[in-house]
Image 1: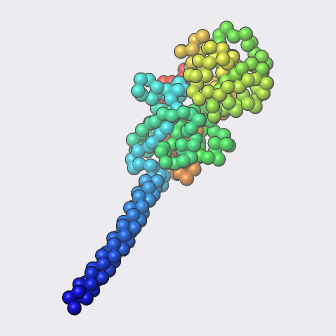
Image 2: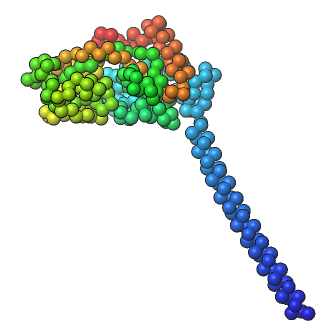
Length: 283
């Protein structure tokens, strides 16, 4: 009788232990799911962290306007020590001020600006002498134009290239993803074309003879040849009639509207002209 009771007790203990293990396993699985669900929720919250302001536009972080530029295009935007300065920079800071926002500015390659804004996760907008065109407008929303520009052809001051006709067939360069690149591909089909990510690299190649002409925006080209690159000259201005705009995510048209209002007010009260006068001799 004692033996049989012990055996029954043993069976009962084993059964309880087995049930307990199953329960623990089930709890472990539930805990794992809860953890995954929590991580997913956290990720979703992070991607949806944009706040909608009372004015109707979205910001990635409340009270801040996160801006990205490509700071190698003086006088539009450039590095001075660890600071980013230039016409575009003063302009966007004034816009931010009028919207009651703190402006933070980051720097990255020009040909990545449109995709960064289209992604909508890192920056609210970009200002960087970005020409308004249909291809970009498919990916991002532009503000109204804030600056009229053309392209320029820059050569060495002692270059044998005397006119635009002599360009076809010589090595030329432009900035990757720029309107200059687009113009070269459409108009200099007999030339060897080399793209450069940054304009200083393009001008370095011009100085070494790797390219014989550099095609990029007129205000920047004129600034370069009158300051840092005095061994170069503007061979010709190409009247492309392009215009610059600030870009925002396509789902944030209200931000573009708010910026348009600020720009219009700045032009009406003379602030725009004051900023331009600091950076351009005649604008």
